[in-house]
Length: 74
Image 1: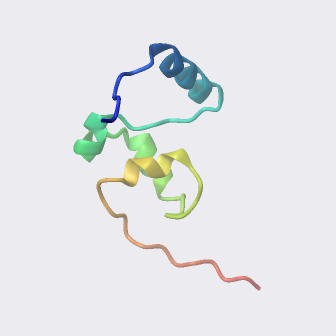
Image 2 (image 1 turned 45 degrees about the vertical axis):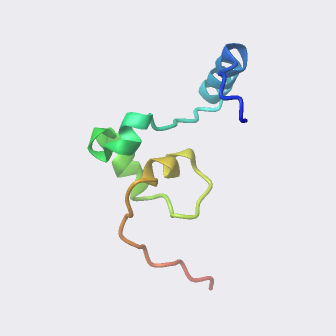
């Protein structure tokens, strides 16, 4: 059986590391109800590609944004 006990010490270190790296992660409530996501983050997502490595993409878990045209290499 999987142990789902939360290691509070590890959780606190993870939170501190995310703050240091300016990593913003959606809450479970925001993932269930995307309308709770701040407009600032929604606006930022317009300039972040679906496959870009950016923690803001975690806010897209519950919905799809309209596709963007791919950039062409010259």
